[in-house]
Every structure is written in C-alpha cells, then in structure tokens.
Image: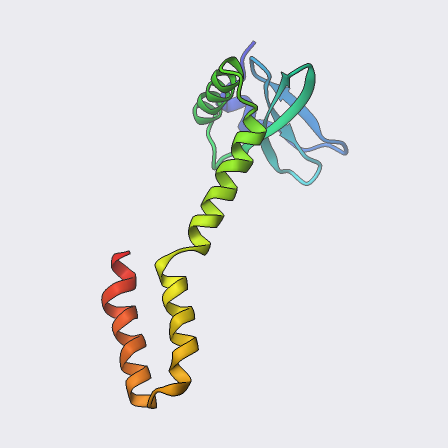
Length: 135
C-alpha cells in the first residue's frame, strides 16, 4: 500500500533507522535522530544503487514521487541517475567558477595596487552597482 502524508507525519524515530516503503523503489528513511530522507533504490547494469531525493517536509510526497518517476525514466533511457546528477553538479560548479563576477574581481585585485585608491574604489563600486546585479 502506498504511503500517505499522514503516515509520514506521524512516523516517530526509534533506536535504529527504519524505512517506510511507498512504491517503485521509493521509500522514506526515518533516522534515529528524527530526520526523514527520501531515497530510491534502483538497479543499473546489474548493480544495486541508492539515490537521495531530499528531506521531508522540504520535499513533499508528490514531489518525491515525481522525482522517482524521473529517475525511472533516466534508467529506461540507459542513463545512470547518479552519474547524471554528479555531472550536472560539476557543470554548475564550473559555470560558477567561470562567472564574469569572479573574473572581474580577479582582474580588479590584480590591477588595483597600480591605481590611485579613489580610482580603485570608483571602479569596484561601479562594477558592484551597475554590472554584477544584472548578470
């Protein structure tokens, strides 16, 4: 029988972590400390894997089921959801590291010692006020 929101809210922690199963590999892991984590177990290329989908109540039952369906679609398409998530996270980190603001601040730090203090303050103030908020 699928989980209900009432069953999730009333689940109390015990000495050992336990699982409340929903459907299609989705379950709620209730930790001894009282945390409630959405997880999904799946098999990819014959190997059992577990993927975390978020924390209840930040991720509702409906959202967890939607994420579970997305994971199952990826598996059906031959994509390992764990590897896919890691690649997305890496791409986000790379984009953030190569942002204009980061490069501009690095440029400012390099050239500011050669400028008058008044000029340097005016340049960084203009960047922070006029450029960075728009990017």
